[in-house]
Every structure is written in C-alpha cells, then in structure tokens.
Image (cartoon, rainbow, N blue to C red):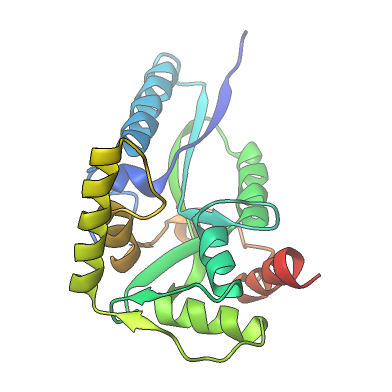
Length: 220
C-alpha cells in the first residue's frame, strides 16, 4: 500500500513487573500474554522498518490510561472508592505511573511530524502518585472521609491465593486474584525520554484531568 509511516501503540507491559523505574532501555521481561504479544507486534513492525531506511516507525508504550468513558483499571479503582467498597492492601506507599487519554492522543498527533527513523517512547504523565495519594485525592474530589480501610499485604496475598484455588475448582474466573493483588501492591513506575528528544508538552494537567474524569463519571 506504499505506507511509509506507522505509529504502533504498544504498552509498558513489555517490561513486566520488575518494580524498578523503567525507561525505554529497560530489559523486556513481560509476564503475561498481553505484554508478550505487544512485544511480538513491535518486532513485526521493526522488521518492516528495517526493510527501507526511508520509512518511519514510532512505537509508543503508554502506562495505564484513564479518562472519561474508559473502563480500565483506573476506572475500576475509582468506582470502588465511589461505592465505598475500596480496601487498601499493604501500606499504600507503592508508586503508580498513569496517563490521561487526551495527552496520549496529543502525543500521537505530535509524532505525525517526525522524520524517517525508528522511535520508541514510553508515555507517562507526571507526577507519579503513591496509591495513598491517588486514593486520598479521589476521596477529596468525591467529598468522602479521608480514612482508608487497610489489610496487611500478606493477608491480601493469602486471600488472593484462596480465591485462585476456588477459581480452579469451580472453573470460574473472579475479579480478584493473586496476580492482580501482587500487581496492585507493587511499584509500576516509569520514565520517558520524550522530554529529552522531542519538544512535546502535555496540554492537560494530570491532577485536573483526574478531577474532570471523576466529576464526569460519578458526580454529573
């Protein structure tokens, strides 16, 4: 089709759950099929790019995305807090990198102007939040009490393992599992070279974007 520019939206899931602060040079250590297939797709497009040096390939690896209408992990967290069903597992000091959908879209549009070449960028909106900060900010926007119900991490792991056993016995999947609890309590912190290698500036403030999303989803 004579296409010479491809922008592929991959994921930071290709790095796995290392718990480190990962930039684009971090090792590929995916732990599930989502991360594996994203990386395999990257290799397909990289092979396409290498066949002609006049082509342009931009690989964007966003962290977890939120925004009005999105029904991913951040929405599920916000919804649990809104319905007052949220329970913190662990001390809540683990750090999460997130990004706002309109900022991601703005960066994708920005890459349309890139010259031929191979580019790989993580996409993250700063500042990062600890789970405590994210939950307390959400409660503040929802005008809820700032107290947080907590259980120890080990107890949470035990509960997740128990649910996994029942899931296997019954042949039924549940919303809670050991791997999800481990992911919830781990660091998911990333950095990006966008600031050093492009002149892109996110047009939307992260905290204000979170506020608008919560208002749209739960208060309007």
